[in-house]
Length: 295
Image (cartoon, rainbow, N blue to C red; front, top):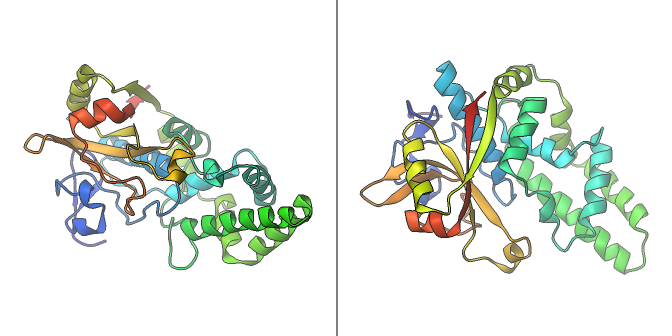
């Protein structure tokens, strides 16, 4: 990416062309940014973007170098759970998803769980497993999986065997590009070990922000490091209501003139709405802030 300036506080690269990012995240041209252009798209994967961003920022603060880590690798680990292979993971995913009103429940996660996965498995670099490359990336792969869920549900309603229908869908997935994307998670990348060892030096902490004293503490914390903020989405679509949805983003500072927190948000499509993160908003809708603390 061209025309990048390193933010000395956060270690992220600040993109001069802020139009590539969500507009509400662009109030301050020096606010933290992910080095790459990946966005969560239509996948409910904000938890992996925030966990990755917190680590990227801390890596720069301690090592003095920017690092571009793979949200795709982390999301795939979240999706795979503890299953031994992607054949098993797909069977497990489809078996759960067909019995849910909304299979997106399986995409949702928590920042502390995502960070624990990094500590356990490490993390590849963005160039090794790209979130949304040309062709089939994570967003398109998940749309394919959701379509498989719909196909199985429809087939079962028509009297088909769920077991047989699941096998048919897995065979279809394995023949298209989606399986190639999923199986990248199983490949060896030496970068994972370095990141695992670095992440093990930290604990991920969380604290409630539903109190004005805590938002004041948040402002003080932002002078030294970025944090993740989880909040309840105020205006939900029916799909969001079905999952009691929250959203998590990175908070980089506080704009005294606008009296708003400055953020970097992976939700570039605005699926969770667009809100000015004033102190009052954070107190009313905020649930937790996440930050890294050296052991």
